[in-house]
Length: 165
Image (cartoon, rainbow, N blue to C red; front, top):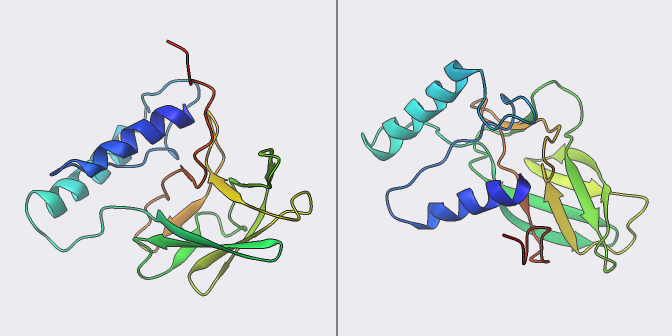
């Protein structure tokens, strides 16, 4: 599912395309969420922005960049105007770090000055970050408009679907 979501996000490079994130309204393993109200509202915001040119927030946080400082990783996002927040007030969930071994471990995350700071005791030399990179991830990062962050990965390591039909 993570690779499917990634393939869908790649379509954003095409002109006049938009995407909404529904990672928070689905029920595993069904790809079609029962919560059609949130899906419809998010699609309407995207149409208002892309089709009608209105100045509305239509996207949750989207990965922009990462930097490494010792054993910590700093992640920045586009579409984070007004600030990042967790939906439930707890620390952000759904992040994982990997070192040169390419093995991912859950990361502790905190929001500091509108960026995410990640750390994992199991990764002393981080090289890659993933967020929401599971079939049915538990993640809670949003922007001030109440829209969820898009799952992402910073690595380009071959996925589980490579070479399969």
